[in-house]
Image 1 (cartoon, rainbow, N blue to C red):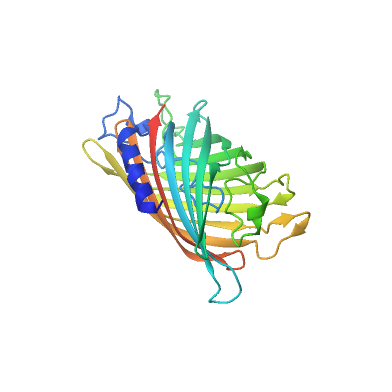
Image 2: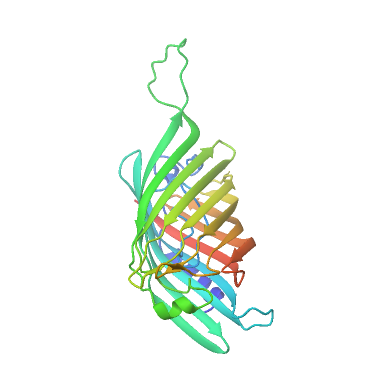
Amino acid sequence: MNVLQNIKYIIIAVLMVGFAKAEAHNHANPCTKHEPFKVLCDLCGCSTSSGSFGFGTLSNANFVGVRYIYQNFESRNGIFENSPISKETFNTYQLWAQIPINDSFYVTGSLPYQDLTRDFNGVTENLNGLGDASVIGWYKHVFYKKKSDDVVDFNNTKEPTGHSLQFGLGVKLPTGQFEQRLADNINPGFQVGTGSVDGVFSLGYNYGSDKFGVNTLLSYYLKGENKNEYQFGNQFSYAVNFFTAIPKEKMNIMPFVGLSGDVYDSITQYGETLSDTDGNILNASLGSELAIDKFIFGASYTLPFSQKLFGDNVKSKQRLSVYVNFAL
């Protein structure tokens, strides 16, 4: 199944499924009165095995929804320029959600289904199944403007500055199957799961004015060892996105551009470090969200412009994400 076919199916799904209603898009506020810069989450890049483009949307939305992610890679099986090339396609179909606890705390979660294809020397290998689920708890701290001591103000309403911080702590669960035979591939990320319990630690900063906004996220993934004594390298991810809002009569459009990247430590097995299994990648992204009353449609396209993965033997080519959510 190629990417164009997958996009076609996602478009059909978008027409059938509702999209998340952001805080600024409730029934009390018409669509001409959006508050699009109350952002909280990233649109960061992902590792070859995580199938994640981040934990939430540009809008400050509590939602449940579905997301499709397409990635493709080329792996050179040998040390020479003319060594045979393995072409890998990763299709991820993901249920994801953001659940509010109160004004300061919320939880994000995702459950992916992976459909992976590998073409090498005229032989096609397909791998599919449930991927690794993740759950992250978040604390959000909003900064408010300080009121002057010289002015008597009978209004107790706090006025936000537009700045906020988010702190996330979570876990990735081994709900996806790890196969030892696939670990010998040039791209060991060709797995539906890692088989390990991993810790997730995140710190985000957001700012929004009435003209533009920026959100950033730093995340560290502390990888555990699976039952095969195989341990993917710890991962540091970072992302920054700049966006604006274009309000229309019945909708709100939020285009964005951004940078994201990942730094991977080496893989270990049986206590030994495997050579050429670390790496780094830097990506450029562009995309947009479209909010219509209770619905938000989102898409992003990511292209790497600097990378060195697995001894420079694996090349990430492009990534595409399309999502549709329904508000809580």
